[in-house]
Length: 291
Image 1 (spheres, rainbow, N blue to C red):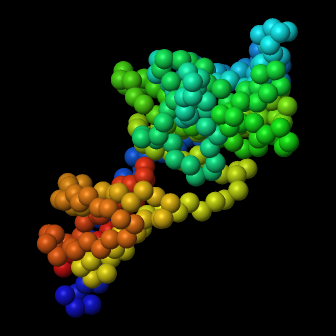
Image 2: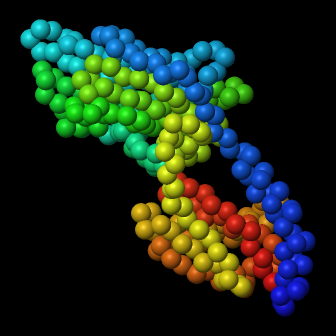
């Protein structure tokens, strides 16, 4: 196909393909909730997080401040997170020696399927964010900085909510500060992805108070009848490339390995379709023209 004919083909189909991509994006929306910075600084004080702000007021997580608790013989200070609401709510983190430790995430970190949600798991509903016993810190507590405190740490959340009489799973985040003494914490804002089971990244959806960080993303680039697939070096090399027609029907699925690959488009049906790469919890789509 000569250049002029190719340009006419692209113009003829691009409006439809753009509408399709727009519809795909509209299916997912990050719901961000800003609040006045709320600090808890007394023993037994807590913040109840209703992350999706549902009208029934179901609390999804409770974040608790502990100061010199337990007994005079052995005192504990720190910040804990508990699962509330629907059974099965969890926090991104790890389990060490039968204790659950919540990860402290940075802007752009992925929160979704495939991540270890053991910071609060279904068998034990307490997660240790910041934890200190008799003045000694626990090495697995990621929310401790006795010199500067923790500013803008992100808690990765997995929660269940009833949607149209069906319990669905959602992912979200909460932005939290922890003081250098571990004797107070501050909740700043939180967000969740409104599409069930869709990945969200820490800080996604928040327009204020977060330094802009460009997150590396996979890319798809067409060269004639070849599709170049490029993954950031920080990504795992496995990916899945799916070709769909303009109605959304899947035409072909290809498993790919490696950070750089070139895929021939010659044996695909002629016309315009959408190529989507799925990898490391991200989906990236691009229109391609087969002629």
